[in-house]
Amino acid sequence: MSNIAPPAGKVWLVGAGPGDPDLLTLRAARLLMNARVIVHDGLVEPAILELAPKGARFVSVAKSRSRHTLQQHEINALLVREALAGNEVIRLKGGDPFVFGRGGEEAEACRAAGVPVEVVPGISAALGAAAAAQIPLTHRDAASMVTFVAGQCKGLTEQDWSGLAGKGRTLVIYMGVATAEPIAEKLIADGLAPDMPLAVIENATRPSMRVLRGPIAGLADLVQRHRVKSPALIVIGEVAAREDNALRALAREQAPLGHAF
Ligand code: SAH
Image (cartoon, rainbow, N blue to C red; front, side):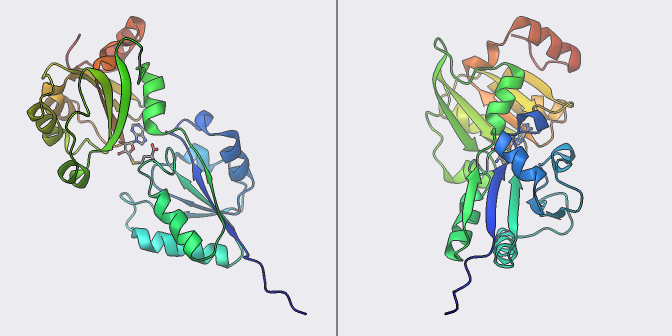
């Protein structure tokens, strides 16, 4: 009696962390070191990709930098196709696959096609950036809530942000550099004190990391003056002004501060 062939391959949705290869999980590193097929996006550092064995096949689905941009549905189809062809596919994503990484959609596509999928968490940019800049996202005296939001146009216009920033809470904005001005306007219009501290952390955990600080009212100016580029996070709340003074001095040496607290 012939058996029905078992599902051949598998997809691993793997978080690559915020940049520094040392911040990979052991599981992610092990999977990479044994990988045959790696589908990765543009945020993954070359040093991380170099962990893969020689002969591994890399498929870049970089969304912004590549000319060969794939739509999300095409990425989903690619993962399913590779797995059904018998491959164990490592789908490597910046940060954590399930934090603004569209990992949910990819997992759904795999399940719908009968492809087994496993998820390996990664250190999300908010956690990596907070650690690198020594900004505690929560603090017994300053914040007992933390919210992650997507700051690109869609997230900004379609969601109610009222109450997300303010005393006793920390707001972390992903993908908010291009929309810095409307973000600040929206939050202040919602009642946020214009002098609420914030930090912009660019290229967190990478050698080129910059930490810029200022009040929310000066956000657009800060981003413009320092030509902040993606990837960067905006952390708004009292915790942004609580960092260790020695570190603050170091940051001042590395990059001019927007405003000193
Ligand atoms: N899944 C990722 C987020 C992808 S969305 C995660 O969990 O981190 C992409 C956004 O993440 C960027 O626009 C930026 O806001 C943030 N980001 C990713 N890596 C970053 C880094 N090294 N430094 C600062 N922000 C980063």
